[in-house]
Figure 1 (cartoon, rainbow, N blue to C red):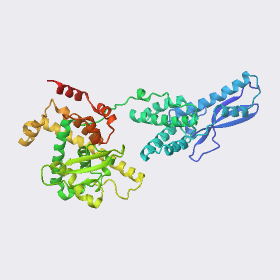
Figure 2 (tube, rainbow, N blue to C red):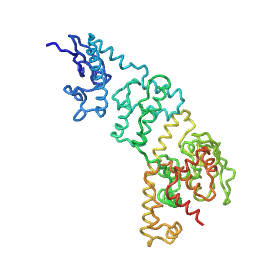
Figure 3 (cartoon, helix red, strand yellow):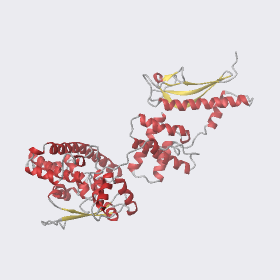
Figure 4 (cartoon, one colour):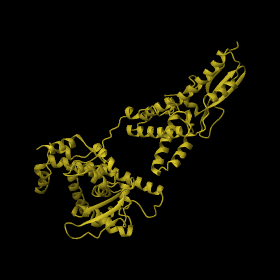
Length: 476
């Protein structure tokens, strides 16, 4: 019996194998002894395909992690073909399988902008720094994985795809902050495409990622009490290193980026350098540092003049030399004539953005990994001081009492083990701004920030404890 309508289905074309071992998924149309097929742009292995349901298996052996997203695309393609066929029938127009395929191409508006190619155009047009470019490319790669595609045209992405991207990222175990940044980068890229008439609409425009994936924007900072006690902990660790390994071994560890001592030093140095970011610390060299004012007096200090990489603002720094800062800086200053840079992170041969980024990423990862262990050891030390006060030496008892450390105040001295290196910058800002007579304009100059945005930066750093302390200062 002759059918009244074309038969439209999705099939896996197993007689054709792609380079990666998968088979293309095709839209097949049979009508009046004519068969036509259109590539869907997706492929999979035989074990991942359900011929009965005309879709990818979502569960079980062989199921692809992005099967649901691909099935959505496949069903949309099939529904469009069926809609075209129904439209021919409703209007009483004769049609063929080839005509449905042609109309399908027209209705889908074959795009001229490839997602990956437009990404590179955006990077070049906006002169993105290497790290920003890498982050954008990473977001595009993640989105292509979500879509189950190796290549994708810009106008193939719908609002539904944009909305589903965040949920898919969530299922992959990504943090809310990461999901938000990925969506924001996709929105920015599509805005660029929209402005350049590459797409009609921005499918990411309606995605409210900040509401869907709320993040804790609280910036990490050590309390004044914790930072003061941590410096004492550091000096004790230095003495322990000397006793265990000797002075020469200690000096060597200063220049091993993966060592725990280097992580100690960099965190504390960042604070003493007025919250200088790691990239700016790494670029400090013999030409930035004036040692002429170092003397044997109590007012001995050295001067640093540099520019912050992010804002290009000039940052003048003065570091007072005492027993504590001597342990921090002395070995690096002595080696600077031979190494050129103050820290051993960069080398003079690192003359490309790629080399600098690679070494900075290695250093950041190593430092933050060691900081987790440092905070854990510090917290254990604080707990020991509180729990074993009666058996402490007289010197330790005096230190505990001078810092007002006890069971009730212990929480103020503990440090979150997830605290990263960047907390040193925030710590400097909070301690300075809570000092008597501190001015936000002075802090902006010291940290190389814009004065206009400094007040908002300070508000982001304030905790309820900071607010209560400020209230207490107002009381007469």
